[in-house]
Image (cartoon, rainbow, N blue to C red; front, side, top):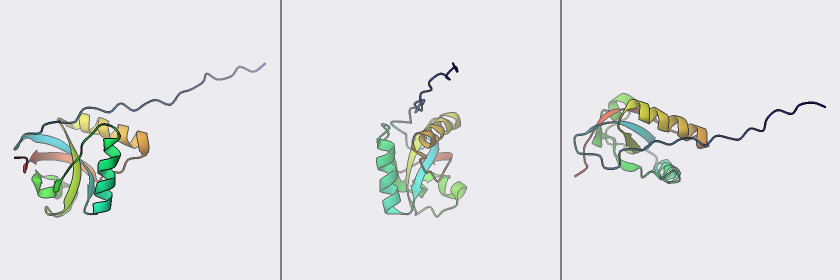
Length: 116
């Protein structure tokens, strides 16, 4: 009789908390989910909502540093989540990809504006 390998179960990705109430002028790490295409922006907002997040939608210029770091015009509309630090943003990105191969434009340090 052959020994059967132990049953494996799929692990559930661990999603970290984002910054729920960002402050004007606050420094964060932004995960930019989509840029430019309204349908992709809407889809990204709906996708992360399934994991309890509320993505922000704004001009890239409202997150100072995002457009420059990720290579698009500051007037481009983006969807994004803000995290307190690089490690937390990376944890989100890893979990999002594991959960559904979530697409992202990238992540970078930003200063948040347009919040008041």
